[in-house]
Structure formats: C-alpha cells, structure tokens
Image 1: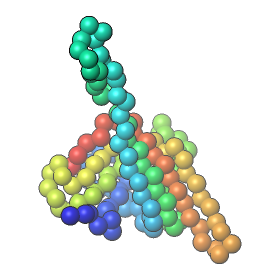
Image 2 (image 1 turned 120 degrees about the horizontal axis):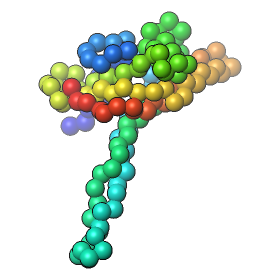
Image 3 (image 1 turned 180 degrees about the horizontal axis):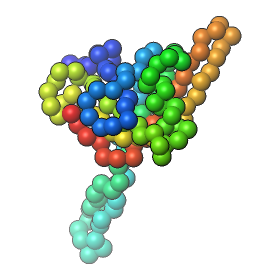
Length: 139
C-alpha cells in the first residue's frame, strides 16, 4: 500500500537525535539516495563483470510557500551562510510510528541552494537543495 505524502514530517535541527523544527508550507519534496558503482572485474575472471558500491550520497530538494518566521527556514539559511558555525541535521519521518528502523532517515547536511522568489500575484515561494555530509541513519 502506498504511503500518503501528507503524513511525512521533515524536521531540522543543529544536533543529531529526536526533535527539531518542523518545516511548514512545503508543496513539493524529493529525497534521493545515490551511489557510485565500481567495477571490480578481474581480467582473468569469468565472462561477467563484477561490481560493488562505492561512495554513497543523499540529497533532498523542497519547495513551497515562504514564511519569514519559520524556525526551520532560519536553520537552513544559517547553514547556507556559514556552515562551519551552523550544523544542520535533517530528520525525515516517512511513516510516523512504524517502529525503530522503519520510520525514516536522519542525516547531517549542507544547504547547496536557498532560493526565494516572488510572483506578481504576491505569493512568495522558497526552494532548497540539501546534500548529505555524513552517513544516513534510520530511526
């Protein structure tokens, strides 16, 4: 059975662990796990290639309505402006209450981009791109 997107919660904070500031107003969200595949084929081996995982990466993209008072936006913006002084951890709960190891993911990340845009209709929107700088852990 499919997971309803409206149950997903995304929290931002400066340290690992439970809790954090929930981000509000997001209309679109994308999470991607990527990994390099390394060829380990021996030239004196069989007829098929052998491969293994190399380095892995995790990225998050979000966009939605901007709120200047949202604490999560402040944490993301602070990380973008000075990541050496402002750690950023993202905790994504995909299935709240599913039990340890099945609920979601947490990762320390860097804000790659932070964009605020306004249209003539007066709506101010924001978009973020984040990338992992640590191992991804399940909770």
